[in-house]
Length: 477
Ligand code: PFF
Image 1 (cartoon, rainbow, N blue to C red):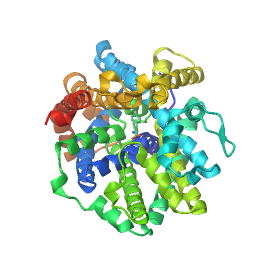
Image 2: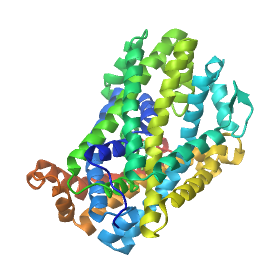
Image 3: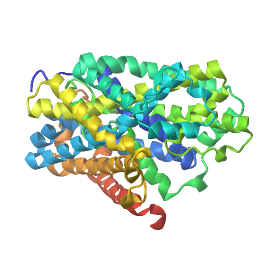
Image 4: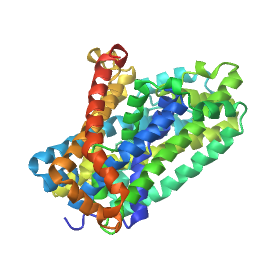
């Protein structure tokens, strides 16, 4: 297992893991979930989920990977026996499933970046219609201002970028690219927030986002907060086991995980701080109530935001809109590379295959697995309205299934630590690089969460999500 590659140090690891965590989940999903769930109260619930539940799970995952120094399958089988290895395989399959649909959405964002920066997307009259046509027609090579309007090509290019980075290895590929993309992402985000706060009516958006209304607290808020926190931190499928396996024994896992959680949470928080003032600015411009602007689901960033960029005028809109979608692409790319690394590490470690060859094979395979999601936005009616899934489209189905697999994977991982590997072994791993760990309060907190809180809560959450997705939670409560 020598020469598997490793991160050069703490900063490289933290940036790569934070890059995995920061993604479409933060910029695309967090703001609309917050919008649907009462804004500030959702933020509050989300923060509690991150620090009380997700942080310990993250520490556990990294500890498993570093202790075993193997891919997800290899780590579980080395520390717990072959049967536990299947839990690693389950995670690897979950990663493949996530990347298949994630790359489709990333491709849309990449296309929007090109069309806004270099094309005439912002001149459209009706952004809802444009988005509908754009996601529907995947092989339209007719051009808008010289740019092929094909999200098949965009997502293929996005997958190829992911593969190029992963094929360069841990330090030269993953670490080097995240060291550029993560700071750039923060800079763009902060820049757009500063600008959006200067717009008329922005302060109403800030109020909606930051002043909690406890009356809005519902079971749905907690369920959405928990599953979003889990997805956002890339937990439950072995991405952090894999990244942890490239981490030196000298590094402090508990403090690194705290920084990663904070970096991820801050981007989600900032994304909300960017989006809500913009939405309230649009409400002001259109002289309507902000609640009337549909901010739920994918249309938030693909329909509502372009309309806002349009309102900013041709030059500024192009600049701010282009920067925004570049930011989304960076966020997505630092996540897709971590998703691709999981199956790649498995094949390199277990099957002793050549890294470069494996990367391109797996990337192509996952791209093909993503085609049903891509054509499910209207092109193939049967996939657009799944009869067994309450008439929803295939992409939504796969995205929802990933929520379920992540929470099940996380639940079983905590059971693995306390009932199989042994919590004392986790302690021994965490004490490396952290002399004070054994006497610390963090250790007691991790024990309680990993032994009791996480398995119970995550098991419960998995059941609730299954019931919610297949039967509709409104019918249950
Ligand atoms: N955390 C990513 C996001 O918020 O977009 C999604 C993700 C990446 C989930 C990597 C799981 C993973 F392993």
